[in-house]
Length: 97
Image (tube, rainbow, N blue to C red):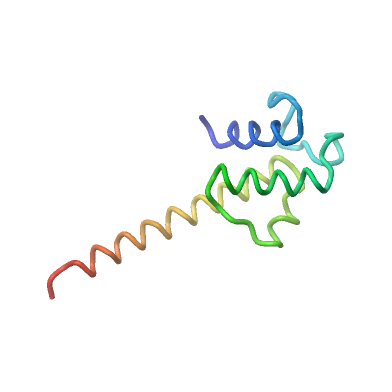
């Protein structure tokens, strides 16, 4: 499943709407059920789904489905880079000197 589809599926579940009704420009202004409580629920659901953590600044930036997708993608990319770096460092520490 594509990242955009996963984000829409999670958001649709929290916002109680159909995934196909959510688009990149969908926001609290266009989705009637997107209030502050559901916004926080969306943040928590995304953190669980993707095993990431948002900073308070990032939470404030999640103003539309498109922005949510962008931030999630950035966090997943950073996570891969960090995980790859840690694996490389781990391999280096196992090499005989």
